[in-house]
Image (cartoon, rainbow, N blue to C red; front, top):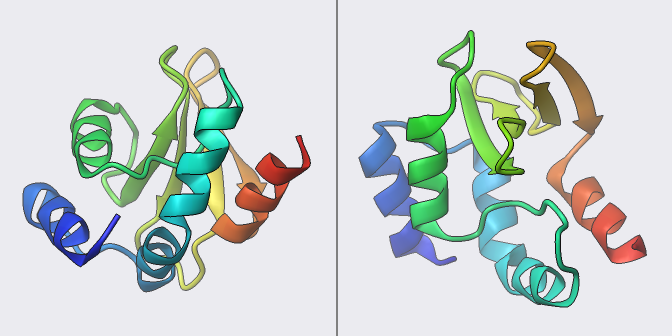
Length: 116
């Protein structure tokens, strides 16, 4: 993902990506792409502008202040809180309509994927 992709996401969704998450995507997209290719059926951060745009337009949440960053195709989503100072990753479980903490920061998610 490059600056033009991020600007397209921000324009389409009419928001500014959290700085830490924006930097994570710029720095780690190649590594995420590699891990996704190696590991089938694993949920990893979306690294394609179209994924981010479509995923955020289709997600149903009780709060509009969330940026969906991944989904499993079954109605569960991983997201960041737009207003938070940090970019902790949260998980939304559609069957219970509950959210829970997943990772302190995007780099922790990536580290977890590397360990698999």
